[in-house]
Length: 223
Image 1 (cartoon, rainbow, N blue to C red):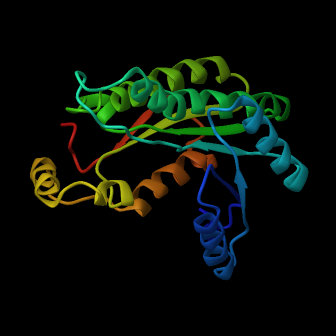
Image 2 (cartoon, one colour):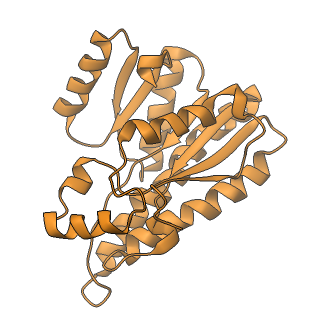
């Protein structure tokens, strides 16, 4: 998106060196990117980050809630802390960031909100009760907010990727990943750009009549 001319404020909670390296790589391609540090599950941090972006750019057109973590354990081994940690970032974090920017979008009469869910929110997965619950929650959150904002010029949609070639998926043991790929009708992992293009479409004026939708980007895994 940054390479296609959209000014991006990318948030991170830790790993400043990695965030600044990404900023530098995109800047070398002519993209306008800033990185801002904060926790999505901290309402005060979310408000501060939005204020920083507004101070620099004057307005916010788009919000992409893509923060996510996993703490995978079977239900019998999962602790209350394991459950809450994932729900805090993946679901409550989307609420906090949306809450921080929503009044600004309402005042402007325009906004595009895209929540990044997961195919696991639809199918469930062994050892991921917390993750599945958080991602399924984004479906209901998106549809409810879409209804509330439907006459305010703000669309709210959800993108549910499947297994995408990322660092998170790379951590899956090779044998287990091979079994996953066997279940994907296209017999391959998705690429980050394939998800990004769907998100870009939902930010574009061409998608202005689409709200409350869930876009599956998973190679047919949920069929």
